[in-house]
Length: 305
Image (tube, rainbow, N blue to C red):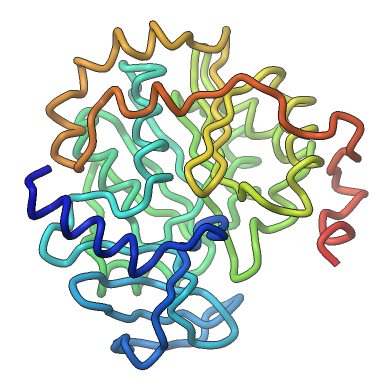
């Protein structure tokens, strides 16, 4: 990043981030009147708002308009730069399996992740699943997102899509779980049964990355459920908590570092070093191991309320 890019990033970090930021959201200390509302519509599950603050444009899901909680943002003058640290972690999963040929992303948002993957791994086929057609329409209209032969969108529930993929015998080298509504991850996509379905569509040696909250009433149960289905996984905390897993065994720090030169040029374009992920990897279990398992019969909403 150039010095001017660094200054922009620091200024916008002060603009958007607070120590209590959770999930996809990045917190803002700004009043709503600082932002310019560009678009609002009622979607299947919530309200979608698109607003601008300075050189940043964001998408927000909520019952009410507010600018301190956004699902997707990008720099309008440098759209290739990844705004969120969690996006950098997700893209960095290429370091766990550099020869990824196909990718499944559940949850579109503004389309930042599929766009970045299509540019960093130009030979990979990318399927993006988004249940809400309004989200896809807004991403195409207000964000630098578009589809082509390499990148396809599917209007479907993420769990239904995975079930159909199982029936078709399809597998993916990388599965990204990034589905959020205005509250949290849809509860039917948090359970042991769903994660078992997801695991069955990951190819041998394939990788999973799941975007979750660092601070949540579900944190312990969520962790126990992932551990039950996948075994040991890597935790990465960067505001959000990212869960990383690879079939056949977790990578070491040395392995990740060895693969970093393969993506040095690609990741530099997005505003970070390929080795950025290494210092943020954690193999430590930081949850209560006796927390209740999340299942289709035991609704996660029981813990949220």
